[in-house]
Image (cartoon, rainbow over all chains, first blue to last red; front, side):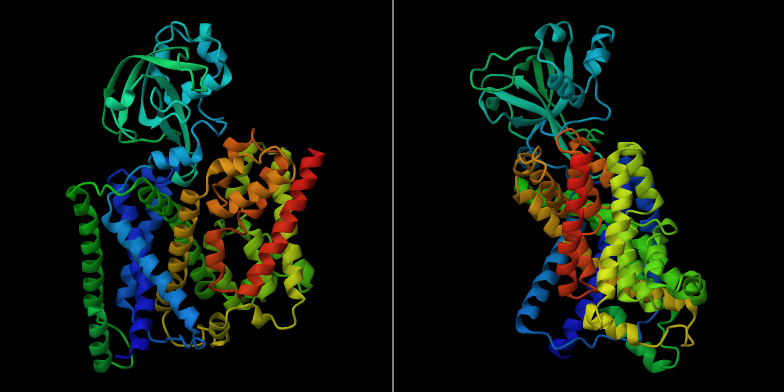
Length: 255
Length: 346
């Protein structure tokens, strides 16, 4: 077979390989309840249904033979060939990644890159009024996103008195005082992992790096007060009474 | 490769029908898919890969774009098959007015009937060209349909309110941009030269209705062909979109938020990079509402569905590079102007 012929054949199979990789990965993620690592739960049913239809069409393609090829492309230039080979290799590498690399959440790299608490959250978070009138003990159920929203709204320490916190998230160092302050962080998702906004609750724990690494999942209990750190810019921080390592929750994102 | 050997053998046996025996084809296809499924199911038990964080996030973000877009791509291909094979030509062509301007205006609203986002629209637009649309008409459809369709209208309304300036700017802006750009390209004397030579050649082939194949077989062939064209573009676009998101600090864009002109450009840059579908982009941009001016959000919502990294790679399957450059510049300017108007009015 000529090199050109082999290349054409690879190009034709490239589409099949990519579509099978994407469809199989989608269905497997759906079956194992891990699609939430990539998209908001409201799209799961639609995504899985379309993937199943796609698989049916792929199986249909194996039955039908492709008999008219209209692949008479213009004679490719050298640069064009290099680009096209490079692009094909990249897409196939991504397909392999889809199939063999275990699914994962976004890491601290994205949390740092997108700057924790830089977006202004609107949906599903607590207001100062609703939190102030909530019964004692209710605050222990507040999520990282709830607290992040409250911390944005007020830095009045009397508001935080008698409001115990119990939050789970991954550790991400504070940029201003990385040795003594870290964020218990989560990503908030509105559509898919692409739009994940990192939110976090600042925790004051001197020398925390001796206890756990950046990116580790932790559960922190304690209460909020004025930040004792000199270099951190956070006015209010969580002063922990207990911290312990925990495993990543099966639904790591908040909505 | 095994299926190819099978295909060749079967062709020798039955050259007229050109078919793999159905049982064999089904078995090979099913086994191949089961093998891929098994690999996917077994690899996580081998343990974590410990990739560097940036590489892991590049993979997660790229996969997220693919999985988010994939159902819309499949839906778009299904609708393209429906238009090309199952709906008689006269249904589409007869209801359209003869006057080119009116015709494009009506075409802008086809999205109401086929609610797909921009990635699903590319195969559908290709199907419409094959069916007899001019290139400028298909561009009008391609630009208008992601915005003027029920899902996008409802999600945008839910996110911002149905009487908000952002909502109104998006609907009217989407219509205007699609028709202005469509008119611009309709002025070109040689419509075929707007397409890639390869796709133009496909369009000159005889109508698939003419050949004696069964409709089901032709439907499958369109699926194969569209998947082979669209999937590499989708993967490549997702990879580049993921790469840019890992590489460009978000703070850079957010720092520009409050200036009326810079915030428009920053939002358009964000739309270009982020490459999410129009059906869901309102929810994406909602958290930025207090950081950015309403005109900038409008520019994001008009520019994003038409031009972004993923969309450019998808459109490159069909239109020439020159068309894409002109389209990007004109749509960018129009979206920025609409954004400025909203910023000063609202």
